[in-house]
Length: 548
Image 1 (tube, rainbow, N blue to C red):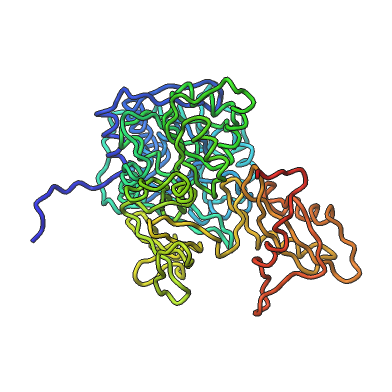
Image 2 (image 1 turned 45 degrees about the vertical axis):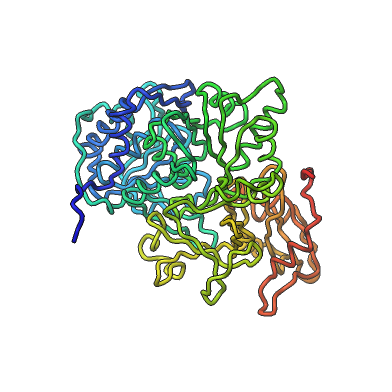
């Protein structure tokens, strides 16, 4: 017997409809790319999103299943594109501008993007890239006529002029809730990046999950600022969770330095915000340099993307009375997988024991299932000591990659192997102990050690190369490149770095190069990163001082 409930597809546009109808005057504050602060609200955002959907259908030829890309900061316009394009039944593919040009070209062509919406910041980058993008019909530049640049981009369209040609009374089309609406690519640390295709249903459920009390606990009494970029897997769901809850929004735009973030926190009276540790280190440095400044409104800071140093967490808690929620997730998980919220059972622990748990990656909220296994797939105990392969499943977890790639990561029971090695303790708190693929995490971004090594091997005089991530006071980790010279070679640090220059992204460049007579290997002949990290455990990058 089936239940007698109404058929109500979980479509993304319903999130904005709810916010506009019941929280229409709730403010949305953005720092514009052009400079000034911009103010709007949910009611106006809804009308403009509908007008954009109408214009995209009429002028750009978008329809159900069309893929369009965005290369943009967190602003009200980016939100309009998300809701307008997704509401039309098309797919928004967010591009990370920090990727190397060759990776961007691969991703855009692989996704079959038809149009690219870009902020003014990235017009020069796309001008250089466009000749390698044969499938892109044109570029919508996210500005008004007064700021429209002179550009060599083919078929440039002014965003505000496009939107003005649309109908604010546009009626959202109805379609199945499992229809694709968003796409984000992995960082491609081993091979080419792989596409993760989100559905309307998965985004709505994930947005609801992240707003729960044992997650981010967002309500209509909050003012939320997603500092984490919208090109980082749904801005950690805040683009959905915040409107679902009717909370006010603050969008930081292109400026993410400490002073700019502080300005937006205070101007918007932000109560909850989210970003990678590097951002918060810059904010704390700004506050330390200006001791009269306080954070009177800020209640909660969500920190993820890479492990958060204890010093950052304690600075917020002890110096500013702001709680810190340590979070973990992946692009494949939409992305939140766990959060360091204090559970009822853990609430009775002494402070020092709670801090031990708080520093971990946290507990999975409802709609995320999690386990650790050995290499044979056997489930391991939750004792906080036994570590194994971390596997997850849930309604907002990918079941495959775009175009059927990477099937080995998904098993017959639906579990996704994250590639992380972790422990889970008796209280349910998970802790990442290593990345199976030895990825280097720097400022919330991933750096491929394998790619650096392969390119370094092309440098004359280099016999063997290994890249490892070592602790850095600002960036969490930075690459150290370890080199074995060929016999008779005197290749130098400068020559190795010069060989890498232009072949990898600038922020991937190793902070230093070390030379060894030989690199340790495993019994199977592979480089032993574990031994290599142990060998350099006391190493410090030039000019860096780690906190005690």
